[in-house]
Length: 511
Image: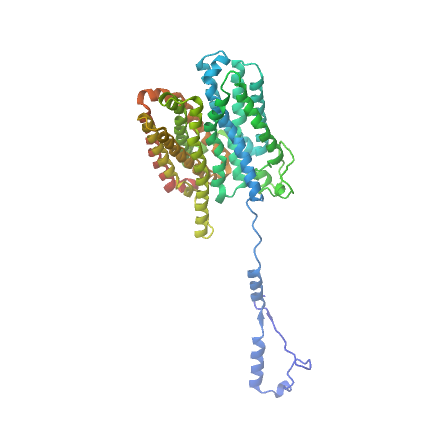
């Protein structure tokens, strides 16, 4: 009751309710009676006040953590996804140093061998969309297991069966199918286990695969580009895939949040070993975690035409395509202009690779640091996703500066260190853009992470395919200096789109 009171009765030494100095009530003076009432009222306690104090001192129930995995196990899962995502770009690039050799091995023309590259790139561009849809519906791990097994078998057959051009085309398709699907699934895995405040640095680790594959591929493939060793190009990929496949089977838990929640079921076990399963049953109540929307054609179109995502994805594709043009030009530049050997040219790829690696890791950590500082200064409120792309303008400027310098340094035949340093600056800009773009997309539409990364990969690979098709003709017409100046101008112009997202992106999210 609102007026409920408790009266504390003070007893004398003899146990009576009244004081020993007090006589009968009707003989007590009025003033003395009034004093007794006031003393009694002073000892009354408001029960509701006591309840309020008890409720105030009772701590609220603890919030469920975003992920139940320990930090070390989270990093282990991120590393598994990174290794799996490394195979698709590595497989495409490791093939390139042997294109001329394969004309003799498979008894065909350069146009037909180049067509095998185009087929691989086309499959690589499209299939991640289907992998993303499958992983968002049935779970991540099943997609890993099926597609990696296809990749392993395709490479084993290419290394073992007699060389035929028809077999090369078919098995290159299965190579691309097996390797490329998991690039989008890996991004979904990382979003499943990583809270937003740490997501950029984790994405920086994951993107090492897509970024370094095109660089390390020629370096590795060049070691096997001889008539006696060419089968080891595919044998190397098969051998490298096998231990990664076993790691996925026995150590990668299912992470799709609509099936397993925050992973507490797996995290509560004593070790990291998991029971091999192709399909994970739902172990959380229906509706406890939102399901990712299905990737229907209408949904795909809506994701692609969502203006912030479209601007960020095209910009990321421009950066990657520009860097790919730089990679493609390396053999012509260093061998024809500077007289380097094939192996020396392969080592030249390490300059952009190292700085791409450093920028991906450092930018991810810096972006997460800015994220946490914002939350600290704003009472725990998360920053808007657009905050992630504040640094991206610097990435475009670095990329543009590196491309311009590379083109004109090589044209003027300056010391090789100048050209290599310029390629490193361009690669740093690309790493900055790709890491912040991926982090932004995962926070802007967190329910469609795998699909968004697949769309970004589609645009990147389309851009790379176009770059490979037109670069020779444009270099002849424009010269290497003006060609890379044109690419730099595209970077500079696209910064306007990034500024627009920073200022107006929130309006699209609200609608």
